[in-house]
Image 1 (cartoon, helix red, strand yellow):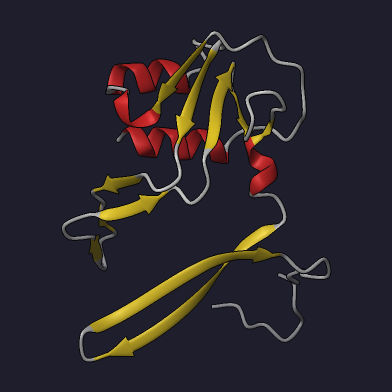
Image 2 (cartoon, rainbow, N blue to C red):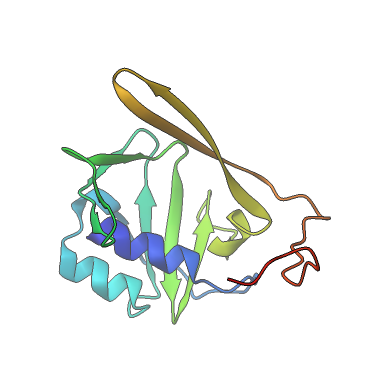
Length: 151
């Protein structure tokens, strides 16, 4: 649950570089309890930086029921931190730093990117691998295509 809160905070951060108040505390993400994560994610600890260390694996249990089908990662989905970084939540915005000095909006790391899935099917099941790639500048969708058929 705490990983989900941080992930959602990252996704909804505004894109902007700003001066932030100084960091007075650095806490490893893995040592935080759910109440601390909630307070942090709500931006109520602007002088706190959370370190996410490379190599850290965060297990997530994910269950989804979508009427037509359901999803379950068993036993866990694992998020692995590939590069050490620091997180800060100030107000409703989330920031990332690699050195505790320069802070950038977390959304900068997702803007202009789209997931690119690679799907493989074999006897053991379906494997989906997704990497973020730069979104083509000319990517546009014409929802009013004259050849489309209304159903």
